Amino acid sequence: MIIKSNKIPYDTLLYDNNIWEQVTSYKYLGIDIHHKLNWNYSIEKMIIGGWKTYYGLENNCKLEEVGI
Image (tube, rainbow, N blue to C red; front, top):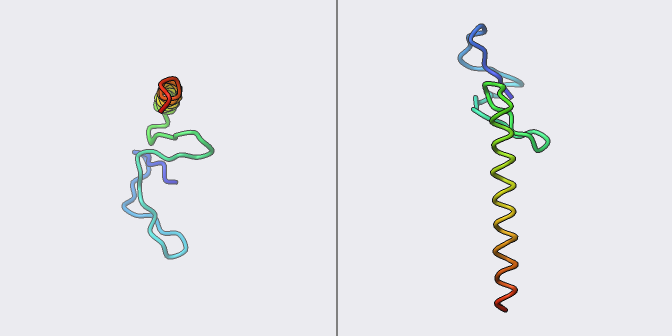
């Protein structure tokens, strides 16, 4: 993972003859790490994921009530 800083300019980073790509976010151990190192991004992703899971479960329960 590359965390870019304005104080350290670089174009590419090589490791073991492989070029690493720059990404805006990275998921590690279930936590989304944003390139600005802001926890709000990770918290928002967890909340959105929780709501998606909740509504998916709710829809499955409704389908079982109808008998589908």
